[in-house]
Amino acid sequence: GENVEQHPSTLSVQEGDSAVIKCTYSDSASNYFPWYKQELGKGPQLIIDIRSNVGEKKDQRIAVTLNKTAKHFSLHITETQPEDSAVYFCAAIVNTDKLIFGTGTRLQVFP
Amino acid sequence: EADIYQTPRYLVIGTGKKITLECSQTMGHDKMYWYQQDPGMELHLIHYSYGVNSTEKGDLSSESTVSRIRTEHFPLTLESARPSHTSQYLCASSGGQGSFFGSGTQLSVL
Image (cartoon, rainbow over all chains, first blue to last red):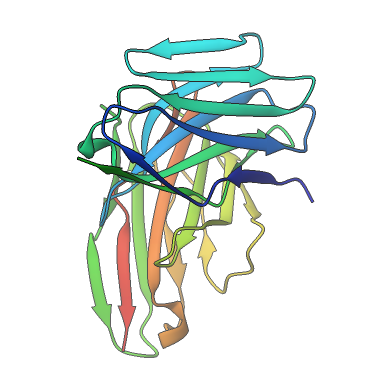
């Protein structure tokens, strides 16, 4: 079936460094790609999203890039801070209706 | 700020009880979803709806059922809870502004 793959599953970086999380999807008709941050005991929070008619989107320290030909999209966090530590999920709309998630990346930012 | 709400936030209940988890959104979104998430990260889609009177099963088989009588309301029901249903249940909705989650219901069945 349609799926979303996410890598890496864990990522440790030093404060101030950049972090990159990558996802690939299988449904070529997918047109919406959100990213979520989930802290312990909370629901996922939408942090940035991108639609298929755009190649890159930035919001302060966070950016997302989309390569429709290769069917992959990435989250970039620059100047990481300890409060960026959380689990990050990518997702894609597949079959026009279903919002399917990657398996998550646990990001740890060390001071 | 996302306007999607789930109640209760926590629920501890005995085996065999019938339970309903509530989910409401005020954004007018047509698409709504239920996910099950165990500790250790993965979000599994168990039900979704693309509008009133439409419901579909997700990728993970679930004994729960859902209904969508009103656009803003997408409750999930378990007729007879079992310990294997212990998990976190997350509701989401999707529209032009994006896709948003509620805070989740942590269900524990004893």
